[in-house]
Image 1 (cartoon, one colour):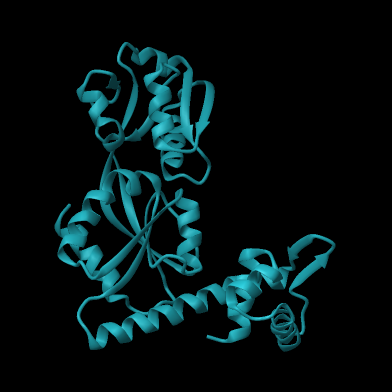
Image 2: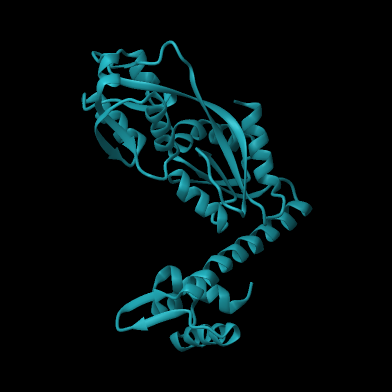
Length: 284
């Protein structure tokens, strides 16, 4: 990969010329020279440097975004060549939204690792919107998400079914949901939040109040404390339902959503990623 672009990536991510020079084991003037070369090459200013402020220009943001994609492509080429000459070996970076990453993938990854011990697996968990961003700039090889994403560089395909449920305190009543109650919701950008908003809107339920939490565990704990109701993947709360600590309020209607796989259209075929996805389908 172009040395100036590699240097630029580290400067942006570390937000420091000094830290970048230390990590790359080159002098700080050499780092500045690499940045100057890029600015001359593209005839644009990339970074505003005023006092202690470090702000990317619009073209600086654009170059960083594309440079990260190039970095990912170079790494993928190296992995593909290695795979061509050797058995299945290398690294797979999996991006997953919270429900998938916390409740579905851990057991699957353990089984996959037992079968393919020479593959290093890295699981990155964020909400759906952030995972889509990581797939777009090739910070992960594949994404497995809840909800829908519309990005021109990404290919999205339905993958697995995920059963959802309306859940609340074991002593709760359905009329409380219909007439107005407190709903505990995930943050904007979460596939679970998108689904909850859709169900509430479709049914025309009144909302007395909405509390937002940035993890499934926090949402579940608030429901257990009697704060209100939520709509969440059944995999998150099935133990508490079985123990009688929580109850569902959609017994007469099965609620399903699709989990989806995200891939970047610009990448080459990734043999390790495809092997992993095939393994998940076979073991679901």
